[in-house]
Amino acid sequence: MSPAPRPTGEWPTDLLDVDGRLRTGWRPEPFTEFVVKVHSRCNLACDYCYMYEMADQSWRSQPVVMSERVMNQVCERIAEHAAAHDLPAVQVVLHGGEPLLAGPSAIRRFVRRAREVAGPTRVGFGVQTNGILLTPEFLDLFGEYDVRVGVSLDGDEAGQDRHRRYTNGRGSYDRVAAGLRLLTSDEYRPLFSGLLCTVDVDNDPIATYREMAGWAPPKLDYLLPHGNWETPPPRRTPDPSSTPYADWLIPIFDHWYDAPRPAPRVRMFGAIMRTLLGRAVATEHVGLAPIRLLVIETDGTLQQVDTLKSTYAGAPETGLNVAGNALDDALLHPSIVARQIGVDALGPTCRACSLRDVCGGGDYPHRYRPNSGFRHPSVYCPDLMRLITHVKNRLESDLLAARKESRS
Image (cartoon, rainbow, N blue to C red; front, side, top):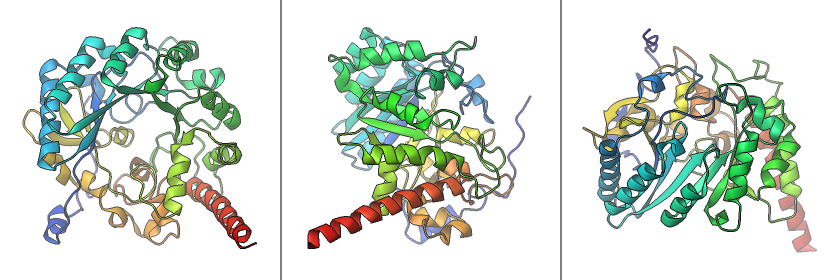
């Protein structure tokens, strides 16, 4: 059955005048981060997964694994893009599905080829995995090529196994914990880049934080479950006084903020604090800095941020492929332009908001409403306002106390 056609008249696809912006002198920022889907299937069946469980089901027609021919084309296109824009460094994240299902040999070929053709551009590599397949063979390979490893973990055993299960319903915590014990051993710990947690407000927030912090990751990241105005995330009702996600995150922030240092970096909290202090933050989740990320699927198609799969069928598509298109061709796609133009991408509600420059409208897919598009506040707007205001109050209180102390 064919997916329902996308409604017309939506912003930015139908309404953003890219040519008009170019005539005013605006130019896109080149891509510096590439999420490469080396494998399009997964060995878990997480019930909240935007790849497999939400509106876009294009994974069904994707090749299971990226072929060597497509890998070579991807490497050459990245090198071509870096050379055209004199980029000193780019970052490539191996992703999926579960990228380790591609196997050590395929990953080795890809990493080696990408660096062979990159010329003077430094190519940094990371892999985002569910951790189940981490073995000495993989970790020795990652050590040889300096590939940093991020692992998805939703907290303690109860929190992890609530959603991150096998197709037979069995939980995955024990296997992930075994992978993490290997990754955090003395031999392999330098490869560990951090933990990624999808928020579930039914889990205990402090227990979740303590489990993750207990692995001593360099970085923690909390992701809000993907949803939008048509299909809101769990517990996110139209009631603006209800803030279940802020209520969950604020105790973690306070626990983390008050903890003795060194504590793990928490990307969400750090990004909010930096934007409150007037610094630019290049993240999809807060702030207004241009997003310089491109996704490349197993068949070589160029896509916008893949979390757009949570909105409607075909949402991430650009109609471009490494076989026939330079990566520069994607820079002028309306949805990629929309994520580079800051305030101009926001609707009137967000533009008038006092927290506009910090929130930045929230994660782009969370703004979607059918028949009008992405020029809306985030479906998480009440939660973001409460969380940011809480962080702001804590920072202001401490800065005021520090000024008073310096005068005494």
